[in-house]
Length: 371
Image (cartoon, helix red, strand yellow):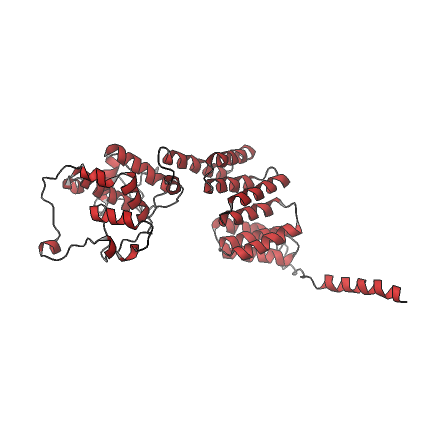
């Protein structure tokens, strides 16, 4: 009698625990499927709409709690939101449900990349390719990780392999071209400049460092001729009030900043101005308008030619987006007529466009050649 009860008890326990697992939600319509919500979530991920992506992946999971792609999607959405713990939790569940699901390993690689664990990230991408040798997403993210790791030859190989599989893949093509721009911009420059080349947008602090270190600004200004023109003085200076320039210790928002010494140098030399409130705003992203204005001031100082700041006043503007009354018009004309900066493909100058690191370095090289 006892021997028969034990197997029946075990069977009952098994049925009980299986019944306690998450139950699938009832579809609300024909298109309310795990796959459909997963695909929609991926579209939101591409646009950077992580909250909306998260909602779609959660619905995908609710419709099928054992659908591995839903957990991969959740991992990437949480990664985009900066919640690495939740990202890891979901990517582990994804692998648990399907050990051969290639995108799950790509997701794991991306999380490792975000943590700066590049070797582990590459290992995950290789596992992804082991299960799907034509996974171009694996090659794409592997290449990006190699770029972050400063292994540019390996990055180029990854992008090329992906493009061999899918020649029309725009993401791979753009990253491959971006890598070429980085290598070209950093060619002949110190190794630390590669980090600037990789920046999608440089800051005021970056430009201060480039002016001082890249152009050897102090030496450059020592060689500058002495201007015979009478320098214009601001009304407050004439009236005997203190000038707006400050010592490095008096600039409130750069204390403890990595670029403090560079900022102090450019402010002291008068090539980058402080804001009216006395701050420098070191982490503010540079626009092309800002950069043109800084370069105009720099060239004026180096050449000791104050007339340069008014040379094009009254001229016709060749750029649709720069009126001749704009405060940067003269500066834009100075940098473009000298070939230091160029117009965009559409003929506009792009006043409010940010300056990527590659462009910032290219401009520094041209400045160095001219000055």
